[in-house]
Length: 464
Ligand code: FAD
Image (cartoon, rainbow, N blue to C red; front, top):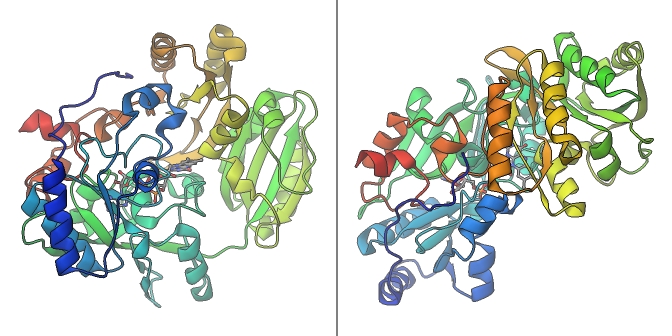
């Protein structure tokens, strides 16, 4: 449920505490860039939580007191040690594209900006497993995997700007989820290098199950400096846009297409209102009035068969192009939360929800439309959840206040949807709602003073 109250927080460090910490860092690691200009602090303390009216109100004005920009693991360790010795909170930041205020520092202190650690360390020839530093951008990682014939399995639609560490610590899935499920599914994250926040920080290497408590923990229980991931074969994806005169035909196609043997990487459905509002890639015609659209990334060998298969279900391919040679807006930047971004650019008084729809989806959508009418528009994404094909929903909705938002979520739950609430602050409340004692135990071992990203792990203050 959306909450307008802040979690219990440690006090913001005094100016003299920050001065002492900065002085120590300037002496011990003179090459480390430290920023404290008001504009820099403002910019590097924010993220994309502004899509939520609840978080926008709750997080207004929260800022770090100094930003540290390390370029090596040794510099990360120096910052971690200094924060522990001076009792200063530390919030890790990748590219700051998270949607839930994950990297907004709630108790001041240091923002640790990780994009200076961006090396791809190794690609194993026999397995394709990659080890890369946490600040590596996902698109850059793919670029370096390509000569090995490999690619990352999952990417957010912020692929071009987001970091690897931020995706694992703060993301959940996205492009590729219809094939590969979600980031926390076993088999994606294989290993981690992590720095503890202690007076004498340790550099740990974790493998397999031992990584799990740090996967999607919002950087509350360790600083990730490098990650080992499974990869997949590189495919030169084609982008395809398919128009349907009737929404129910588009829905039926989205339900059935993932069950074919066509190799797909992304399948997104936009209803007529959303399709009319978003920008389209260069050369792609705008939709006709009321036209719903499917946005598909698919393998070259699937293009001809998919066109025929979709035509037999009332679809018309209006545009297709290989992703690699396409110019302008990539189709993937119309999917996942980019749909919300484009809609909100025109309708800033709207917000969104995230859910997995019950099956069959049709009656659920009809029930919600009957109640919310023109205040709710549907954007669906095909995903694989625990091995099964499902449709996730990221609908946009007119902001009518917290009470209406709660009523809508309650109705979705009653009708059988599984909500992932994007209007809450903690790891637990945005996920399954329950405390994961492994995550909390990991924080006790790796961040015993509770300095990392205060206020974001509910289990921490509930269990101490
Ligand atoms: P940040 O926002 O900087 O950080 C995210 C969290 O990770 C924070 O809690 C931070 O403290 C922590 N963190 C960052 N680096 C480290 C580290 N090295 N060690 C420990 N903790 C760390 N998300 C999806 O999952 N799928 C999508 O398709 C998707 N689409 C999006 C579309 C738009 C338009 C927007 C605005 C957001 C979208 N997101 C999506 C959310 C976000 O872009 C992704 O989760 C992204 O991967 C976050 O990466 P980042 O580098 O920006 O992380």
